[in-house]
Amino acid sequence: MPTLPGDCLLQIFSYLADDSKSLYAFLRVNRLWCVNAIKYLWKQPFKFALVLKSTPDYTSHHRRKTGKLTETFITCLIHNEIISGGSIQNKKRTSARVPLISPPLFNYVGFIRKLDLDDLGLAIAEWAEYIFSPKYNRDTSSVKLRNAIFSVLIQQKSTKYTSIKNFRNDNSLIEEITMKIYKLFMNQIPKLDCLSMKPGGTDRIFSSTSEILKVHLEEGAWFNHITKENMSIIHYPRANICLANLVEFEWKIFRAEAITSRQFLIDLAKICTKIQRIEFDMNKPWLSDPQPQDLLIPEALKILIESQTCLEEFELKNCVLHSHHIMLGLNNRANTLKRLSFRQVNSLNLEFISDIAHLYNLEELRYYGGNMWSKDAWPLSFTHFPVLKIYEIDDLFPTAITTNPDALVSVSCPALRTFIYNQRRYYRAESTSSIIESIGLHCENLRHFECNAEICSINLLQLAFISSPNLERIILTNDRLSLKIDEMLLVVRLKKLKYLEMNGSWNFKAESLNEFLTASQPPLSTIVLSKNSCFEDPHLEVLLDCLEGVLTTFHLIKLTKRLSLDMRRQAKDKIENFLYKRKTNIEEE
Image 1: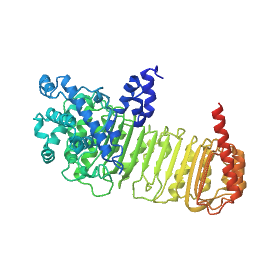
Image 2: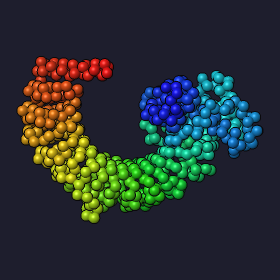
Image 3: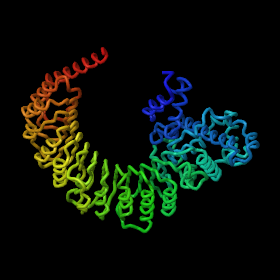
Image 4: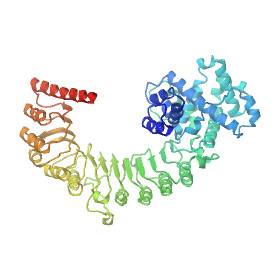
């Protein structure tokens, strides 16, 4: 292990990029491990520091850790500026004034690739709280370092800011410090891969129940003044270099001025042309009469989308579509767009949604929630998307959409692997029948089938399973009707089925189950039955006989009929014995 090349270590560490505990442990192995682990720890350092920000577990101990991390970050910025002879006064004069700011072990700023500006702002606010804590002020060297940092960043005598009262009562100081930190950051970071921001407000940025962090939600708190600087970063020197190679961009609108936000997106479109993933949260899911300012953001978003030459993934959240702008921008990127996701996107004009049919290169289409205000079937056929791999419609109020026949580019969807269709709020049998029939007619290579809806026709369900003999995972939920599936079990053959979950009143005889398992002989390792009214001892006996040496997980939840104690013990013993033998064989090998 000590002789592994750095490239190999980086590849291994990439699988643990979100595991800060493991990465910290790697720092202590040797210098090579330390050098490679530090790259991932500082790739998005403030996310690690504030991982508990939305929980009550964030305490004063975590504040100290966040404060120390931010102080390291600031000293690194200052040191880099000093050695480069940058804008912090004269190099010699500044070095003489800050002898306590020693060179960092690494150029940590150069490792940062992902940045959430609200995390950075919160980290600065936590640092401001930390450096004026009683424990910090009892340490003379720490106080001198704090004063030296202030001296460099705001070019004032350090003695002026040793008083907690002076600092807390003058919000312009924290604004000036934040501005200098942001400028240094834009000037020194080689490139950012991911930028996320929530401009314009702080009241809902983190729903924390931690008493430690509630101070930042108060009116006039430092955090409010810090976040005002977020949208100014694009105008700082060298920001065009830092942001030119963005791969991901995430935005969530809070009380931001529409004109300012629009201009930021337009300016970003001029700098960034290689973004591959955009996540945009309008933060306005309710339907209302559109105002003129409501169209400013969609217009700017259209410009940003169209300026990207390799956009592959787009996710839109909490939005009401009042215009064609967003869909027109996506249609102009139909050649590259592969993944499209809508969450709580509503629309009164169904034409805005029908444009999805023209995105012929989609590999993933996911639609969560949202209202279309119609009770007819969802009409987007799988034949609109010949290379579609994942299709998920979850809790959407179904809608009739007028689609252009010219958008039909295929007679089948052979690439589809995952189908998920859930109707939790609005049960419509017509919608379910239409979409399951499309699965049976156009898709033949499904691996995952999940449906929670009003299924009225077992024949359509049978057609879907017969047309996809390679199914590996099935999840069916039926909460309203009692459905008999004996005939389906007699004709369906699923020889690759590994996971089966059936919730609700599915009625079948033990003989039919035996016929299905005997003929299919699937590697069915997991079975979950919930709220079933027909399952009895004979059914369990069939499962144990047909799946002996295969079944490893078996859950029965809220069954109407109670199984005998002997059968339950027998099932437990068989599964435990099989797992023990398999574990023993693995250890011997």
